[in-house]
Length: 179
Image (cartoon, rainbow, N blue to C red; front, side):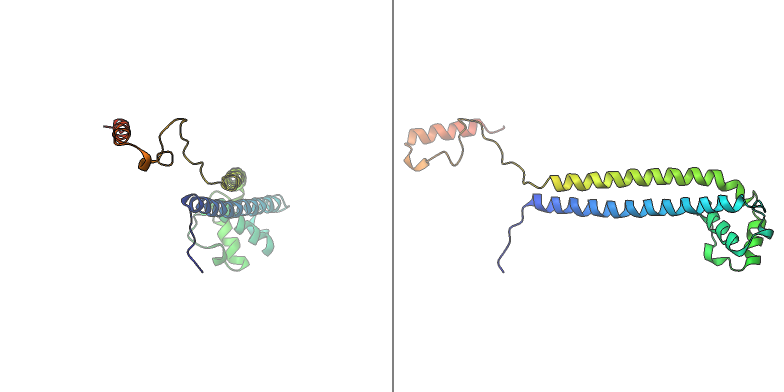
């Protein structure tokens, strides 16, 4: 296989396409994560609205799991992993010892999840726009334009010129150079 010439605009276009694809993948993951977190908030609100009103001591194991998962959505900076709290007694104890109660975090968590979903949707829109721009920019740059009557290398036949014409051309070219 022989050598293949690659223009710089092709490299830049490829880089733009790869960047746009990575941006879109990251944005799609953020949208999915925000939707999942919002689902956890919805489930936690349902659990908090049950007859026990979110009292950990009277909640079932599934309700405790839901409340714990919600807590890690509302407060993701916790040092203990969500999966580190095992057993109904440990979960109930964890939720009972929270000050303020886990149910007081519902409104703020819903607002934070909605803001994250909006930001993720915006990032996805921007990534799609970047991809569209990279695809649309599929043509090499236009060659430089030459003013009519301008002297170009292709338009000059130095071999058929007289010495006087050569000197005049050289003077014209050197006078047009920046000083």
